[in-house]
Length: 218
Picture 1: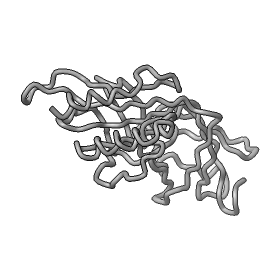
Picture 2: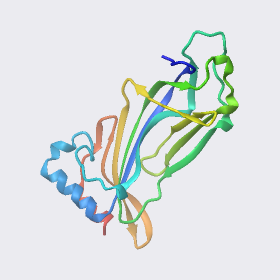
Picture 3: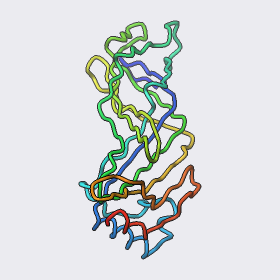
């Protein structure tokens, strides 16, 4: 519900969440040892109970939100005003995550996807005051072309008249994909992807193959 001197805007669209980590050899083997101590803790993914994730291992801290290029919005209040327009030039990418196939690294990506929705409060007192020139949306994009071959965009901030507005996204359930993988090199030439674990929407496609760490850290 809108508060005084604000207007509530209902937003929905395809949405994603992303978190990504990059481990060196010591941390990768520590993860393996954690798994061996209680494999049941890993039933929902490689990092379910791995608490010792150091900040230097975080490639992308958890981010979640609607794809700004699949967004639709309307006023929450009853009004004769048309649905608010969003100018394409107001949607700005600030970060791109893509596959750079680092040598001697183990990477974990969790990508969730599905329909998301939420309401944001714009600092205007009436929908008739809305000016699309004052709205700005920034987003993070991920484009993993080789593996896991996943693409998406996530709103990272929304501002109106240089005032950042709060975002609180909801959903009725998202599909979850997990990827734990590294890269095989011949000297300094990339040869192939090395998949330790992979699941799509809760279905395990590749169960833990820890012996492949030797290939990654050869």
